[in-house]
Image 1: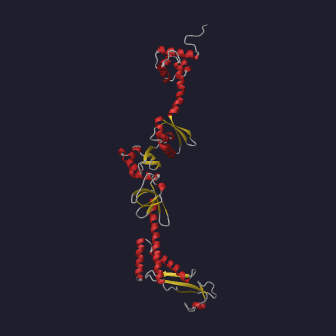
Image 2: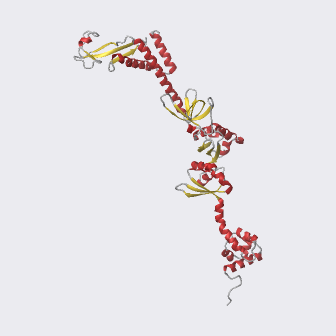
Image 3: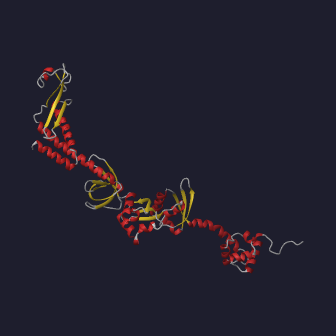
Length: 426
């Protein structure tokens, strides 16, 4: 290959790999200098150059003329200098060709090594610059191989790694299987960019919803917060920024088509869509969906603790299998939830009522139906009943006039009060 052909080849490589020609030439010159130092000396002043037009190589050794040589690699005597420069005086620099018989071979080998190394470096840098802005985006690839329990995914130009912690536990893959994942982060590594993928992160679910639901993509509906137990259950708080658009309906789609396709992508993961609420009580009640909450009481606002009451038949649903539902609700809201059944609470409230019912039933002329009517009307206390007039009792409990009068009289007698018309006479 002639010198001019060499320069033409270097220029072509530079264009293909997007590396400046000057950078390639400078690196070859530096590598040649390092190689020649093995022959001349590790501290020698060697200057290599490549003619930018012809591609001609040249390498010279530079030494200083001194009276007494202390560093042979950098200095020489006036007598020695005369071989290379006639009339050389003390303090002059003498330049002479590097003593390497196989200089051309060294230069060629060095050029090849430098180009190979530099091309790899540039390609790694280009891949990093290409994938770094894609952090947070969904990519498609295929399973290339397995590294321990991590999956190496072929992304075309480079490989990505899907660590065990970022996999959906119930999924299994074979070589060549298609994989869709979000780019969690891109790090610089010695062998190229380290592209870390994820299918278990909240970000992956959010990106799927943005792809599948136009209202989320155009910000009409906003995803406020997501928590996941990957592959099993997720809770997503959504909020509509347009009063005409129902956030839940937009996410569900016609006959559930939108949410179903998302669930299929995440191994059938159950997704609870939760409407955004401004009040803490309502937000906590919503977070326990699909369970229906009877009431929420904030027992310790400072430490974010709340008591949640649900119907007896809703208790298991509110807590979820192995506590999954309440655990995700707590993670979603940041509150500690004490979920209780209404049964014990109702029993606490019913205890005084039962006691009053027994006292009422002991009154003369009061049967079970009458007791029920009195309790419903709020007459659970004998003192209150004794203080009531027959007319009031008749109106509030729906009793007959005579019956009401008899009950009031019996209540007064039981309470030790004189009946109407009784008392001392003057």
